[in-house]
Length: 83
Image (cartoon, rainbow, N blue to C red; front, side, top):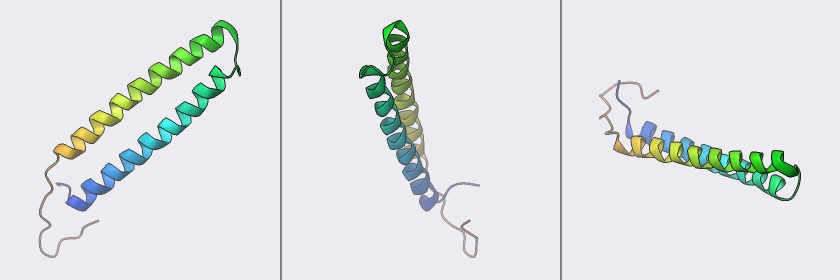
């Protein structure tokens, strides 16, 4: 079964929503660590890990959106359900 344009658009919106939520959450965590919530080597390591995690997830969301953008929608058949 191929995706309709509506399904492709919904997938794109969902990925964008997840990307935005992730960015907000990670930024909040980085700010907590940078503001001294966890001091010393453990805090430095956590900050570095959070930044690496953020870069990896940004790449993942970019690739997911590129994949969605490469999809060609199917034409709905007459009388077919669009669920």
